[in-house]
Length: 255
Image 1: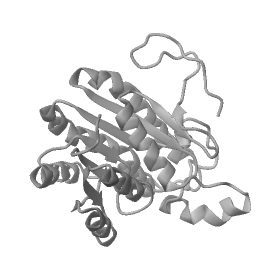
Image 2: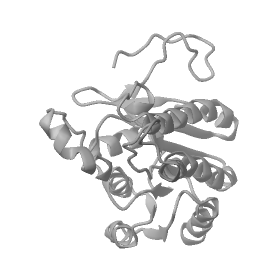
Image 3: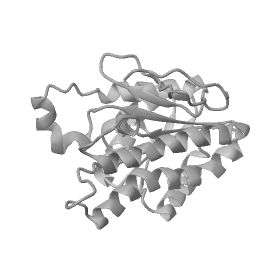
């Protein structure tokens, strides 16, 4: 996909990975619709790139449908959707489990991706093509004993991307996931001191944004791209599991 003169929706676009991707897309000539619950931050980013802002709670299907309707009205259509909005979890299954917190994080981290996908597909099909990228996490590819709920959220997003990639190929719509390790965003704020103390290197938000653009322009589908410090981002290859649409088992990437 050529980026210039395309229209993109970016959820969670007010800060972090979303903001960095808004800036990267706009620099390539994309008209961007920024969606976020943070109205002040979202409007500031949209104004910075000459784009549009739509206040959106991605955990609501109606809000996602309204976002798409607004984007079509404001920009004439949708070619790209970066479904990025997410929140931290930091609780598990056991004595610390909280059902209300669980519903909230699932509503944003998983429902928000599914609702966003459902909402944008008709607009993309009307354009005859499209590209969707969803933010998962390295937690969706590896075991995360200290944060199993978050890992479950993100593993579900990986499964969705791997499944919808081939399912949407006939509509000329690509669907991929990005799976960064700890990256510079608000999600790491509650554990930033711990990460610093352990010497964990945070991935710059700009690196994730550049990978999103790389995925969109490459035209491949059904992939889950890992991003780690000091490694070139690449699609994760699942051990003895056929790649999307290939029927052939891939060799694994060592993480």
